[in-house]
Amino acid sequence: MPFGPTHDLIKTLSTWTLDAFFQSITSTNANVVPKAGPLIVASTHWNMIMDPALLSTRLTHGRKLHYWSKNTLFKNPIIKFILIDSGNIPVDRTTKNNQLLFKGTFDVLKLGEAVALFPEGTSYTQPRIMQIKDGIGWTALEYAKNLRLTGNSLSGSPETAAGLTTVPGPPAQDVTIVIVGLNYTEKDAYRSSVQLEYAQPITLSADLVVKFMSEGEGEAKVAVKELVGELERRLRSVTVNAPDWPTLWCVKIVREMIWADGHGPMETYRDSMQRLINLLALDSAHSSPALTSLHADLLAYHDQLKAAHTTHRIFAQAFRSSATGLLAARLTAVAEICMRWPFFFVPAIAHLPIYAGSYLGSRLQPLEPESMAQNMAAVGMFAGLASVPVYVCLLSSLLLKGSDRSLLARVLAWALSLGFLLVLRAIHDRLVDGFYDAYKRLKLVLRLDQDKLEVLKACRQKCEEGWDQVLTADQEDLVKVLRSRGGRFEGGGGGVRLKKD
Image 1: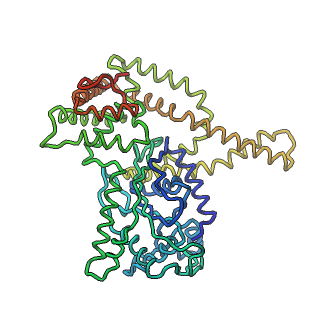
Image 2: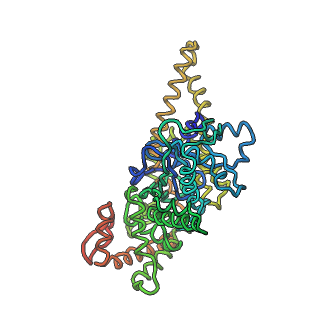
Image 3: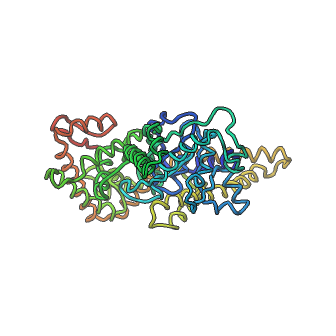
């Protein structure tokens, strides 16, 4: 199935948007993705639009991805052209015949291409993977069955087989299931980070395919369940999974205590988070009094931080010690903004349409975290695209004012204007994180009063002392790993404690 210019355009726009929205996008174990051959890419689904955008722009070797779309969307000829040109496969979800249901998918897989599927079925917001459906198991095994029954035959569909009835070139191969976990530091927050971690791919064993194709009653379902069970095990191994929200909230605070940037190296983000979750998850039968007390203190601190509309990282930056007063913090925050603003002023003004669009997008579905980020990114992207020709016209008019307006001069002015905008974008991306944090610190210190500040300081101190008590000699291996990843610890053995700034 050919990919047209629509796919390249969407991928380019998605790349620009993701680079602007996220502070960093990191891939771990990306070398396990095969360079060629049919793939089913199975990914977690925390964010409805951002997830496919990340997969399409960051999949190893630049491999292009197909996605399923309802066949009813292809009735309009214009929409049909856009969907087909961008690599979407029409799927009739009403049919009970799996070979017919997956016909287009079989075509693209036999042609050695890749299809992205989300085994959870839909995007949602939970602290762990809640469900893995059987659809991806049926897809992979029905393809294996079709390959053995029909060989290199294609459907001849102009949409999915480019009108071909036989695979050209090398014979069709068995499919490989590539598993990727998308781990967001904060999936609905501007300038957060995300890690794509790959598990070891799954190849279908001959015994499993034979079991699926056997005539025995229920054997096909047993084979599917076996495959889906292995898929779920590997998918959980590359995602952050907490038993409940309170545990995840506690771990996020501890994470920000350990690393100055709030998350540590993104290459090992999932592993670090899961280690902390395993430590802090309460078990009524085995949890120590120190851990139970720390858990309660962290939740109380979380509630106070949430009420103050801030995070531990921002609070710790504004009040680095218990001795830092409110007036000193306010003066420091104002002085920092004043020092940063002259350098950030022009790029910020140029990005005002994007900021306004992103804010508008965030208000469209404010109670749905899985939609908020995509709305912010999408509306901000379109606002930015709409502003580019306006800026180019304004800047080129200034350059041409009182001078020759020949075609060559105008083209040169347009090129210089566009180049200036690209430079502004580069400067903005370089400075935005520092300014954004400074802005959040300023908002915090202006919002706080003395009573709230004292409560936050007391909560922080209790959490830091409680964490130091939990870091006994039993956690020496954990501390060693986290310290190797830049974690702030001092001391050793049973005397390990957080390193204060």
